[in-house]
Image (cartoon, one colour):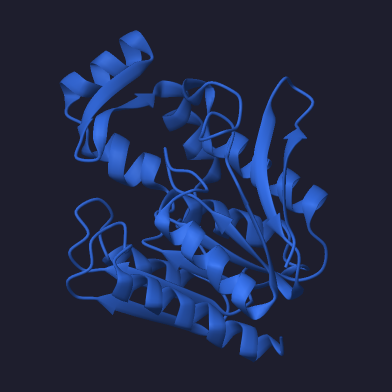
Length: 252
């Protein structure tokens, strides 16, 4: 199978790095998480899976992430969701299976609403919709909120490396894209994978998503000892099995 790479000019000085695998059936689109990119274990494992099966796939980096240009501190949920739509519209055709990890799960839900005529299925991996409100702002101490409002950015410790910068712009924009405050007009099959040992995103959030999407075709798979990343060999096997079943269901 042919894999091509390129950069998508967003017209605002930003170029999105992308990798596309040509193939048949619904195109699998991987949507990375917050401060993650298209070279992670889940993205590359999914790419190898699609290559083996002759299925098309698109993966890319949001602005300010990975190999794409732009400043991470300028990013917002709205901007990154717009990046996803731009990449999908420019680089794919036909039906899509969206696979979103963590923040990518939120982006996947927004994309499924915006492109309901094209999204054939959606897979969330530790999906974190509304995290800017629920997991950031609501959990901040008054002193942290004061720093954020004064400086425009708050750096919080991260178990994954350097402190995580949270901008006031991210919090304010996120409030304009909340999806868990009512029914979501998503009617395609939805599969939600979540580790019950996830220290970052509560697994109960998967149940809230399942309750709010309008489709009756929802399955939630909880991995009792799974962490937030769900990147162990057994987790990647579960991801491949989940996507494979959706491809069969779609007739690919």
